[in-house]
Amino acid sequence: MPATRNTQVLSSLYQRSVAEYWNAERNPVNLRLGEVDGVYHHHYGIGEVDWSVLEGPEETREERTIAELHRLECAQTELLVGHLGEVKPSDRIMDAGSGRGGTSLVAAERFGCQVDGVSISEAQVSFANEQARRRGLDDRVRFHYRNMLDTGFETAAFQAIWNNESTMYVELGLLFSEHARLLRRGGRYVTITGCYNDAYGLPSRAVSEINAHYICDIHSRSTYFREMAANRLVPIGVVDLTAAAIPYWELRAKSTLATGIESAFLDAYQGGSFQYLLIAADRV
Image (cartoon, helix red, strand yellow):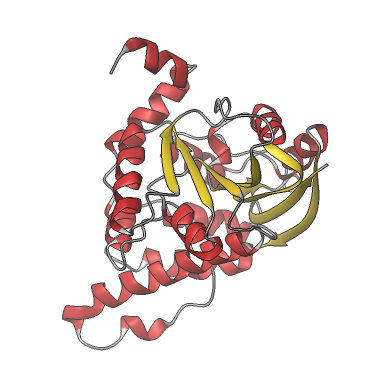
């Protein structure tokens, strides 16, 4: 990789460490779920679990459990995409921190528009572009090796932008400033994210464990609203998904794909120190 290109995209040692983590990541909990239907997500799921997947023949239990976990993460994606507002085929939308591309592909198939995904992981960008090609969407879905804090895209280029569990890797003031620049007036921003609960106090031990596991820095709930207000992003809807997220983690904890972080998520959610929110905001 040329040094100049690396310098342009990765502006700090921390960003370099995050990029290295995701370039090397081959976690079965991400890959096995994506193999169900070829849509690879990098986020968690919501909704009631069909616990019957744990019953029946032992030899097919893992297959049933993986399919159910994937169904729950697809439900999360559909919820996010459903909050992007009116998007026409002539519009352009952006996935900030696009991972292996799942949410972008879902949005493209729903709206028929152009989608740009950005990630600081070259491995993720390459993987996601191949998935777009395989689904016949590469004429209007493109993934870029770029930094979502400084994308290089033209001002007011996008009707909608979203972060799906990627805001904890950046400073929100810098992120929302760039989003406000990229969005048209009246455009829509949506994030689904975990945040620590200000009413609880400082981040709990469980939240700190999640930070250490994913090399991230989970923000407080109030920080999202403060930085949105400072950057002309006015919330129009907030959905507390905490209760809806717990069943996913309960099932994952019983699966062969458990990574050991499941108990921290369950402790944080059930103890009240951590919340899972959808926030939709308009650019004014």
